[in-house]
Image (cartoon, rainbow, N blue to C red; front, side, top):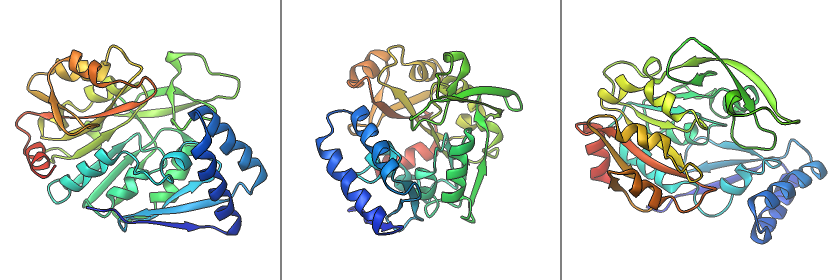
Length: 299
């Protein structure tokens, strides 16, 4: 099904800045070079320049035009992570709840809002959560939580916001902050305390290195039939989240990025991850999940 895509600019300056960015995207030889271009243009144009992106009639997602990540992926003509969009559409009407863990600024939160009865979105970083609130806080079926998704609820976790990175956070224990990085402390929440008991939910998990701990906190949700979309990064040769799930009894994994095919070994996952700079999306669920069966029927 062909998607519809509508862009609304906050002014003539925003339209001109967008035109420059899309031209730069065509000639930039690397992600880093494009990001520097975007930030340089952001110093020339108004920092308030934004584009409102609406896809398939979903509520608009606001993109600041000095954002080197979202201008590159959300605003370019190719669809951003079409495999996730396909899973959301396949789960619509079969799952009551979509839980967006590591929601960032809310791209998938707003895309999911028309498709599910309830949407729960969690984001840890203060500035990113503020942008998420602008994009999705007014939607009546969306609930937002400023928390870090982890194995146990109610603890305090310190993380680092990396300067000039789209990623909201990484754990402080993974390395000292750089000169321009910001350190924050936030409460943890497990997925099992976000998703009601007995409700098979569709869960998107993108928590920048904390995937295994997050999955440990989702054991009851998985037993209840939840389907989890999670990221296994190309730079992780251990395939940590996939390894954890493959060692979890009765759990099925499906690779999403090139058709939906079941994977049963880490060797398969490693072979499929060909780009060390890319995050690869996989599905995981209990083998008896009715929601998984319903999704696979539609894909």
